Length: 215
Image 1 (cartoon, one colour):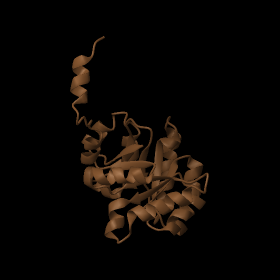
Image 2: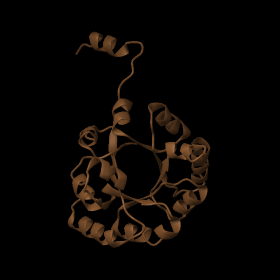
Image 3: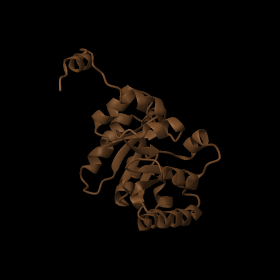
Image 4: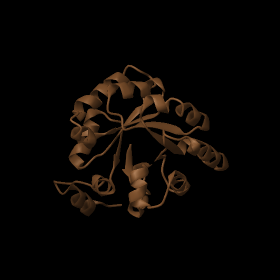
C-alpha cells in the first residue's frame, strides 16, 4: 500500500485519492508541517481525514500519552485500528508499551528498525508493522537491499510476521527498488507521492485510446 509521509495541507488533499491508504507522521514531521502540534493534536485531526489507517508516533521515554490515547479512542466512533502507533524500536523499552496498545486496539509499528535483532524482536512481540528507513540505512553504512531482504526472508518463516513499510525514500527509483525487493508498503514524501501516481504512456497510448473511444 502507498502512504504519504507528511501532514501538510497538500498531503491531506492528496490522500483523498483512494490510491493512498493513509498518512504517516512522526514528531519531526509534526514540527515541520504543523508547528506546535503534539500526538493528540495529530490524532484528532487525522481522525477526520480519509484513509484506511494513519500512523502517529508515541514515546518510549514516557508513558503518560498512553492513557490520553485510550481516552480518545474510547470516546470515538471509529475502529481503533484506524490508527497505528509508531514506537522508536528499542525492544526492551517498548516491551511494556506494546501490550497496553494492544489492549486499546490500535496497531503498533516498530519504527527505525536497522538490525535483524530489532526485526526479530518485533516479530516476537507480534507488532503489525516494521518501518525501515531506506536512505538512512545507506547513510549509516548499511546495505539496505541486503538488510531488508534478510528481514523479508525471516518473515517468510513466521505466519505472524509484520508488514514492512519503507520510509526515508528520496526518489522514484528508490521506491521502485523497494517494491521489487518485496516490501509491503511505501510511505512517500509529498513531492514523490504526487509524482508516483502520474501515468506514463511512452507510446502515446492514452491519447490514442481516448481519441478512439466510443460509447
